[in-house]
Image (cartoon, rainbow, N blue to C red; front, side, top):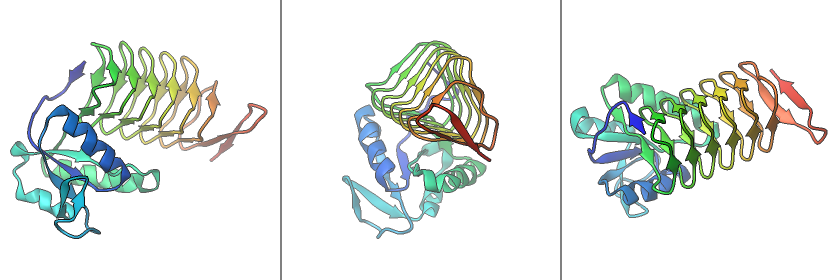
Length: 219
């Protein structure tokens, strides 16, 4: 497994919602120190699974970028725009989003993981796959050989990507979806949960599958 940068700084998690709580447990298993979480809607000092709320995201700026790593805990699909906005703001100030991987994930030795990638419990990523920055491979997802998943994607729990699938940036692949081999899915797409994708999907498309296995495209 390869990463562009390997660091072991203490971390701050941006956000304190459901996904952030999963990340707290994951990071604890790695043995890394968690300074706290940020959330402008919570009271400073409030407890979040044993980690203190520090205040708004601006609390990060009290730490030098060289002495701190960040983890983006904003993952709700309805807040994807916020997740991307926070990432861009922090990176512009020189902060680094550390990749995080659950110890139960199975990742081939020649997989490429970029900055800020999150690999959750039970995920499997096979030889030659490339996962680009700020993408989430969620619980139990399978990414087979030579897949390319571009930045800011969410591969939801139980998704199966067969070999040599390409996923464009900012795309959501819904829970339990299966994508056959050699398929290309464009950027800014939403694939509904439980779909079976058997042909290429153009960018900026929503896909809902009906019971006759036909794909309905919603531009």
